[in-house]
Image 1 (tube, one colour):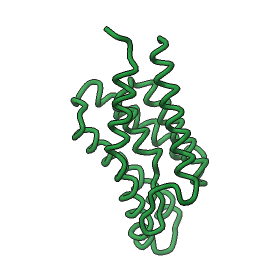
Image 2 (cartoon, helix red, strand yellow; image 1 turned 30 degrees about the vertical axis):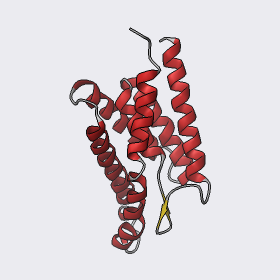
Image 3 (cartoon, one colour; image 1 turned 180 degrees about the horizontal axis):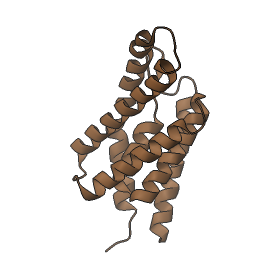
Image 4 (cartoon, one colour; image 1 turned 90 degrees about the vertical axis):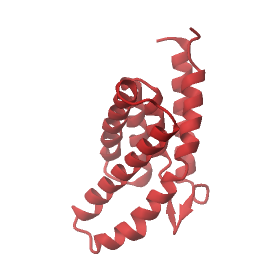
Length: 169
């Protein structure tokens, strides 16, 4: 661990904290049909593309704990989900895929779809809510749309942080 890693991790932590504030402050986040964007999700996924396994998983846990706290969901739901997803995405980016804009966009979109679908499945379908199809169409699809909009911005921002705050070779 060197000073560049610590500086980069502090920048990522500050990014997640600012996004949490933006996400939870009424009127400051992207909104479609009254549903706010889940800004911590694409940010954590894009961080995972540029970090190794342990830091990626750690930032997934931090983003998940903030999301659980802000959304009022059961403690640990998003933390566990994002930890596993960020670990998997980091492993994928390190060993299997070439990280570029297209893979960042596709993995970010797939991660958003997976997390929001699992959120609907656990919080609505398994909980026995009335009209789960209506809840999915009226609440989760608009949330998915406004969560997916800033994926390119987060990709390029975290790419800049991940590539430029490194030790010079």
